[in-house]
Length: 319
Image (cartoon, rainbow, N blue to C red; front, side, top):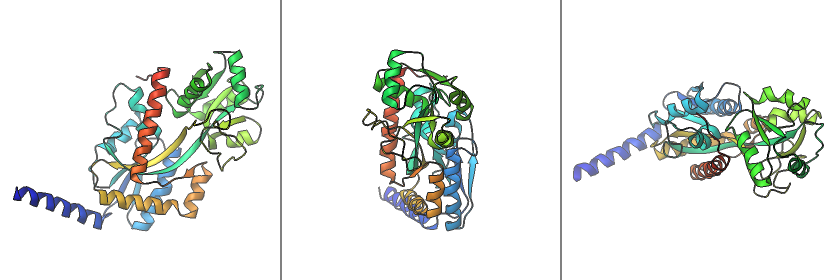
């Protein structure tokens, strides 16, 4: 019993010492998607400031594949010492385990949340010639033409796709999902009217919408976006409580010492208060968050439950 108590004391001492000296070597930040995307841009913005402040290299690595699962699994199985981190999105943390038959990690069990970094609204956009000016008119039109109006997304089970499924369920309408291999491929088809609707990240189509080449009907977050405050929310358009977004947060492997998680959290919050970082995130259409590890954990659980429900209702599956 005495030996066991000594071992516990030694472990606590070692953990405290590790936190005091952290970071003592380069940090890897894993991004599970390609360079240049939203996750990558957020990771590099935060990583650069971490490196400058701590005097240690912070290297962003893109480990792409399997809908984000390759990168996420690498971090889930990394040593829990704070030197391998994940900047995540909804796909690998709140969606994949509900649509794939096998996921090699548990999103809530295998990670230690650090902070939600930013939330980016989605936009429901229409072909300019579609005879609707807002969501209410879209719903009315869809009810006269069930199963004929298509909506483009970057792919099956993407946040954009699930947003469309949620809208159909909430409005009692039937649209046709048309998945593309990336958002950019569908924009010309929606602008040209081959597909009447598309769901996009706000930055993806803000230029086209403000130029009149696309018609922005609503954003999907509870509040209007500072990037386009003239665009109404779905909540304002007759769907109170509607809330979907692209979001990005930081995770460490589970069992990372609390002192190190707390140190990482404090650093992320410090970085997000920097004017140039906030401006950089805003330029991508994002709203800075910087919540606590407990709040981020609760957010992940709520997002997972929300998407699980609509995936089950809509019968969305991936092989």
